[in-house]
Image (cartoon, rainbow, N blue to C red):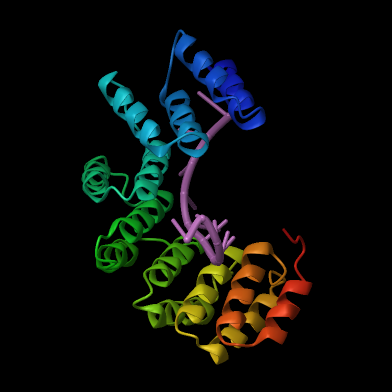
Length: 239
RNA sequence: AGAAACCCCUA
């Protein structure tokens, strides 16, 4: 099984050759939840989340028990498709399986509800977030980005960021800043954006592509072309 | 041996 999994990873991640990876998977004499999850994840990333979910259903029908790795991967596929009904079903299975307290699974649920809410409501996402027993930079980023992406409660994203800073136990990363700057741009809050920009510089992530692009977007929207240009000039990698 | 969060663009 270990050799098969390594081959699947080599073909899919290494050579981007999903077909060969799938052949190895299909020919494996014995499978376990690791090999199933690996194949589901790679199909979701390199092919189509829809096919990943199909394989997940095959996994269940074949009698294998998904674990927290499987659920976070499938929830992420579901989020990408915006399948809210399926997402809710997954949520209830996760709860029944006793996996809902895992931080990765919780993070995936927060993200799924944020992306699947038809009306852009963050209510379900926030409920999951508030009930999570532990948080890390990813769960904070997931909820902040959730508020930033629907555009109706960007101030909440900013308030959550303030809580992260007060708390002090979690260090924001480039993903956090990208989402937060998007929220600032949505409401054209230049003052807040500049403060956030300052923090990003202090933490050394202002030149990371996604942060830099978010800064350019923010300053562009606020008609600050010189500042946008400065953000562009310091990008590590321009594309 | 496997999982989760990110900007802009594509829209």
